[in-house]
Image 1: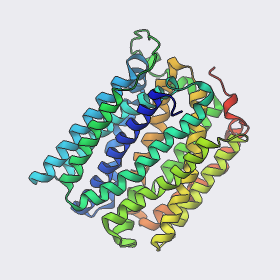
Image 2: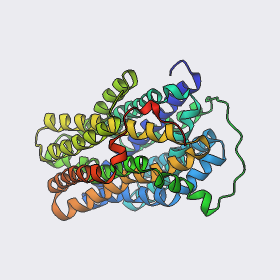
Image 3: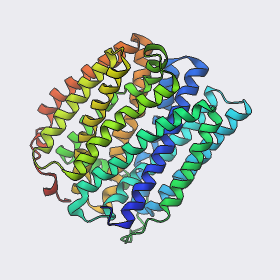
Length: 401
């Protein structure tokens, strides 16, 4: 993959953008909890990102299929740089509060609604289709590298003050936008299709007609929704494990370390057989690791549980992403990626809200454990509902239909 220059710039653009976003997430989470000491407010951070993402993603998919995907990504990264600069200014000048943070994070959610489907649908144009599953794993390794570096860097930078952390985020978002400008590939001219309801909802119609694809998205979505314990990491770091902001950064990085290790392995040794069955097993391991983390009172055990959680989630991500990219025509990729992002990406934010709300009602530990048990039940139910997904064998045999 790295013999293709366009993919190399894509990889580094993705790293820079996600590093900046992860640093922003760490700083926002710690600052909100420091201001309010409320688990519900931590959940609201996810909710205010979910609302614009859910409302705009179908339109964002249409935009990704109609306009230059590189330009869409670049504009979104510049918007996020401006938001980070606003948070830095507010923190430095002393007028920042949880309401201002929610408003600015809302803008981040809107920008990422357009960035994610454009970025995902750009990848298949950069490498030959025969190596796309490996490219998907390598792209996932970029994301996980960023999720390792970003939270750890965000926690360290926050020690110097929130304005310094946010200011660094703004700079890194700008770097991502500059790198994006170097991506070159032959782009098939697209028709100027108007944004009709039929066009906007075409991705959803496409996915609903394919049971295996629908099953992969649904399984991953529900697992992420129920297993959204990451929103509660500030509570574990401060009140349960007593490790401070630097330790919070390590916990946020742990899932990415596990995921990166698995992504690098899958990039070199992609799944050869039984891909569908492997996805179900991986999601079950994800649920079990969530339960272990929820019950742990040891930093070492918590870190290990998050490593396993990240590795199992990466297997699910690679299978789902490869299935979607290899089974979708290029003219539909933006809209299909938007539906995928709507159900998977936004479920991260909605899962954070669910975890925060459940923790406020039941307590932090019961909230996480119940989510892990729910994930295991969803796996058992999914095997019966989506048999076509279970039967998928080789990913490289899939073709656009």
